[in-house]
Amino acid sequence: MSEAYFPVGPGLGLEESFLSLDDILMSQEKLPGRAETSLPRLGFALGQGTGTGDAITEGSKLEIPLWLAKGLHDSKRRIISVELPKIYKEAWRTVLSADASVVDLHKMGPYYYRFGSQLLNFDNPENPEIAQAILQTFISRFRRIMDSSQNAYNEDTSALVARLDELERALFQTGQKELNDFQSWEKGQASQITASSLVQNYGKRKFTEVDG
Image 1: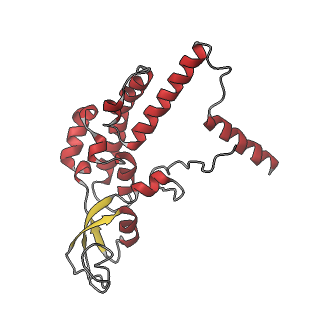
Image 2 (image 1 turned 60 degrees about the vertical axis):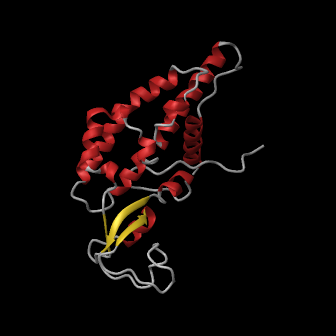
Image 3 (image 1 turned 45 degrees about the horizontal axis):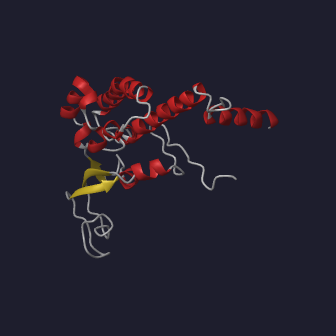
């Protein structure tokens, strides 16, 4: 029986996949910002008024979902300006560089890596430091996450997983699945080792290219 829904992976870096549920949820995360000009009839849409005819005055502070901020942001017309969420500011970048493993990333933002990558779409002078902080945070946490996933067979991992961002949770679950599959095979509970879905999909794409 075929599956009714085939999960679509999120985009990479600055790109988004509008078929990915993860990317759709990530794009709803709010950004602090400010109106750089008057915005007629947008007060209700942006949570700044009670009627559809209300305007947003110049200088008003805003909380804008990422997808809308990207649509309104224009460096030439200066419609809105976007501020950094606190987890990406210098103070938190210093904390993460000191010891990223102790930070509860899910509490600070469930899409820390993907949301942070999207911030690079805006012309912020701190973009190089933000990109470096995101990369170093991932590097410093990756080994511990994968080590934990490979050494927690039939154990309660809820406390660890609760502190991970969504990308890290996906990596942890992949590690756990591979560990469980290996343990089952080692005990003779699995008839065969099969290729991963990534390998199978790659093979299908190559076969299609040859036919084309």
